[in-house]
Amino acid sequence: MRNGEVVAETTNRVARDHDVTRHAEVVAISEAQKAIGSTSLDDCTIYANVEPCALCCYAIRESRIGRVVYAMRSPIMGGASRWNILGDRKLSDMMPEVFAPPPELVPDFMSEEADAALQRSSPVTWAFIRTRGLVAFPSQHIPLDSARQSNGLAGALDWLMRRLRKNFFDRFGRGGPS
Image 1: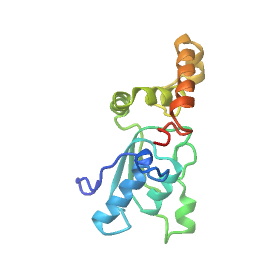
Image 2: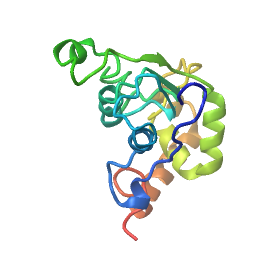
Image 3: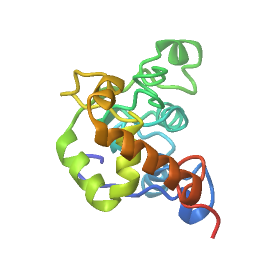
Image 4: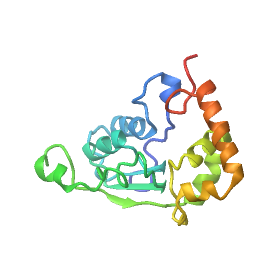
């Protein structure tokens, strides 16, 4: 988003394009740079359902996006909460020609709405993601492992997710070769 207008809007295209680099954020950055006619997106905000991963965070930093807004944190793969790429000042201090200073971060933005939308769009995949603890919510105070132990249904869900992953998903939870 730039000056209140959507510059680019995308979804994850990894499975569609058979290309592991086609994360929604990277595709959006590419489309925005083409639309604006510049590699610098310093006056733009990027919105995501889930905290961008490390790959996307390097693209965000190099494209100089000024603000990153996301609904759910990603404690396993997140470029802010796991590796702090988005907040790393050393990148811009050592290579200011390439990397902008850390962008403004707005985590947990409309997390309940994003959770509901992802649940509706792909319930099985979303159950897998939630069961594995790949996302975290502002209201989560109980570690996922403790929650699993106290709920017998979670064990059955874990078993189902392992089966689905083995038979239907590749190692990243996306559809296998077509």
